[in-house]
Length: 383
Image (cartoon, rainbow, N blue to C red; front, side, top):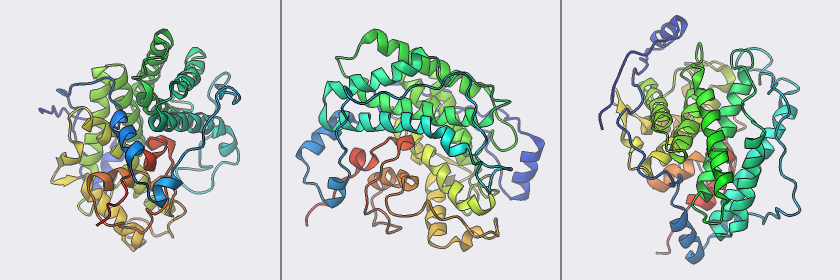
């Protein structure tokens, strides 16, 4: 695959930062020759996974990953936000430290939306019941018809811009799991697809400033663009999304750290791991289109190097101390926490013993596919 590498214009402060950290930022643009081979392909092979689950001998972890049935007749859908997306910045000051006291309350709506979609998508994969797919599409249509995730100014409300990348990504991933269900209302499906495409194009129209142009937020924008690009057969979105993956890989330092995440003080370790989540999902989506992003490298560095660094740093965050002297926030790193769900995909493709001793419990994390363990985990075979 040929890749064009035009010049990427960066804020002067960002270039200075990267030079100071001894890392060059890739000038890789989107994969300009990448093709969407199957616009109905999800990030997993839905039919194959359902067949596996129906005949698999489950272990305790897979049993614990089972989802509770959802009754769409009695459960009220999650209503979209009314009016502009007015979300305060997560942090009171800057990009770390104390969380804004109103943040969790306000974003609860979007998290409820994401959780319902991820749950329904997983239930459909397991059961194949059309009702779950129809319920999922109805939830999306409610937000689509309301013009949700569009009423914000990214220059004035950065957190709304961020929230859109996450919620649009979840919506697209969940829809991809049910998109081939033959009983879905075609008109409703087209309305939802058109809405997602509009949301994505608006979301990526803002390039970002300072580090938001190129840090984990760029990868989350890349994830939603890649998945929505597939679903809507939009090559522009798909290639733009893959370009964010290339930019991310191009930033990896010699030791495997991501310099822009290392600026986050007590959250540096958390954000290094957080950045791997959308990169993993882009690689999984691309694999279903015949593109191996796990093999992609810049300056001799690839995704695997970043994985080795974060695993080593979780075991010993002294590796972070040359970048951030603060005691690291380790709340994200415990068995079953969604922050490590990306590792389920990685170990599925690159089998090895549990590198952190944290993979014994199932993962459910909407932003990386939902019922991740249920969707990709394979129990060890009896000798």
